Image 1 (cartoon, rainbow, N blue to C red):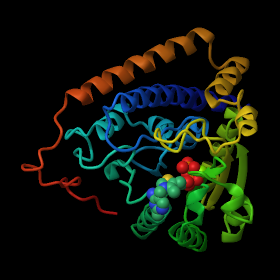
Image 2 (cartoon, protein in one colour):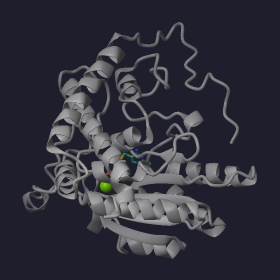
Image 3 (cartoon, rainbow, N blue to C red):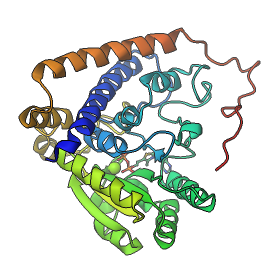
Image 4 (cartoon, helix red, strand yellow):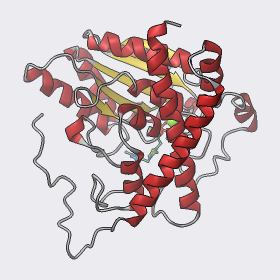
Amino acid sequence: MDDALRLPARRAFRAMLMARAFDTKISALYKAGKIFGGVFLGRGHEAISACQAVFLTKGQDVYNPFIREQAGRCAWGDSVLESARCYLGSREGLMRGRDGNVHWGDPRSGNPAPISHLGAMAAVVVGMMLAKRLRGESGAVGMACAGDGCTSVGALHEAANLAAVLRLPVVFVITNNQYAYSTPNAQEFAAPLTERGRGYGFAVSHCDGTDFLATLQTMHDAVAAARAGEPQWVVADTLRLCGHGEHDDASYIPAELRAAYADRDPLEVAQRQLLAQGWLSAEEALLWQAECRDEVQRCVAQAQKEATPDPAAEDWCATSWQAPRY
Ligand SMILES: Cc1ncc(C[n+]2csc(CCOP(=O)(O)OP(=O)(O)O)c2C)c(N)n1
Ligand SMILES: [Mg+2]
């Protein structure tokens, strides 16, 4: 591996540890009845998520995380405090306690707040990148993240087609975890997802999203190529190591498939690879794990102390600040 990837690799791994610690805590709170609505975890997706965002610059680029992207949010530079605030309904949060679970963004920093995660946001990213071009801004990349199921949504098709026609500097990251909720790939699409990207006119890459270093290299190359002006379509494969949400036991995933991924937990693979590469020590890994657990505890405790909105007093506006010019 190119030594230039050492720092992004370490940052990505740290983001993965933070995301796993956060997901574990949120799952426990959900089971204790402390969270209303759904809880959507990124178990199995962490390498793809962290590696995609670690090459973006908050404030310059556009990043639209999908529903399993806590690791990406951490790699992008967001605090888990904002994620905790959204789950716990804090009025101090960016969504003012008005939205829930993973439905939050911060348009000022380049992360558009979600309409629906399912396909619609790809069109928003494409629109934001077109607006940058019309304003004469260059150098930014727009990343739209989606699951395999999202690729069957009409809005994603329109966005992909337009991005390719206009040669916008975008990366569409398609995380193929082999299911859209409980629907397996075979019932979702007949043509491979990579072929679909080629059909739009994107440059296409494909990686094993449980192989941390391979994923890091793939995302690095895709972001660099998009920054140079060529739209990119990345398909990254994994298996979700949890239910669609914490309400779902994922019993539709066959035991043989689960067994095939038993030693492919992205965090364990990443740690093995980083140690073998000499880019991380075993002591650091343990220290980082403890630091991430502490940080998650601190942020959740803070969000739990904060007030929830008072419906009689709130104006229910999540964007009461000056709207950004795109
Ligand atoms: C238009 C629309 N249809 C259905 C849903 C419910 N829904 C949310 S996520 C999801 C599955 C998405 O599958 P995929 O894109 O593969 O992502 P994954 O959950 O597997 O990570 C569904 C059906 C929705 N939010 N919006
Ligand atoms: Mg899926």
